[in-house]
Image (cartoon, rainbow, N blue to C red; front, top):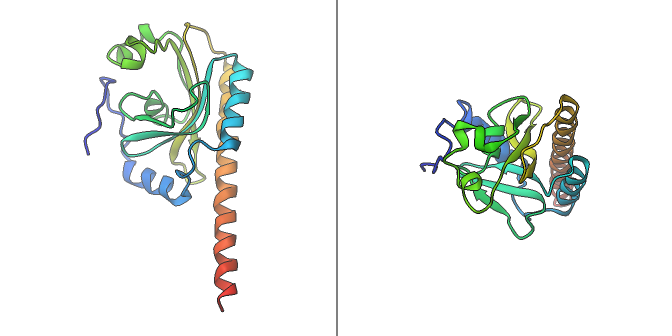
Amino acid sequence: MAIDNTFNKPIVPENEELRLKALEYYDILNDLPDRYFSNLAHIMASAFNTKIALISLVGEDTVFFKGNFGMEGTTKANRGHSLCSLAVLDSEPTVFRDALKEPCLLGNPLVIGDFGLRFYAGAPIVTKEGFNIGTACVVGFEPRDFSNEEKTLLGLFAENAMIEIESRRELMEQQKQLQSAATL
């Protein structure tokens, strides 16, 4: 399926097939958004003094909001519109201090449309195998600077999200083993 890409640059990484398999492995796209991740997003919004914070998972053509603060009721976005699609392309946090000064964002409806996005910072959520499956991100409506210390902190939020995702996968495996043993 072709992605409606508004970024004027490629948004599909070379390892896309393996990245999507890694996302599927965790089986976490159900129950969106999730209370734990929404609480984490709330803490992020408070820590960075932003109106919006998200824990996102980047699927094939959709970005799913596993945690959502500030956009309650919104559970997903078109991958070709969501800046999270850009943040999963890099191992370091992606920061757009002023979206209107970023050539790759000048065709994006979230920037040039009514939403009015001006600031974005997103750190990739990285599996232990090195696949970027999502982001911990914060969004604002005014340009702003984002320090190296803030980038580090955002990275720690993303790491914490991955720790929770891993824990849930381990619990799911344990439950399967118990169910299997109970049927013997």
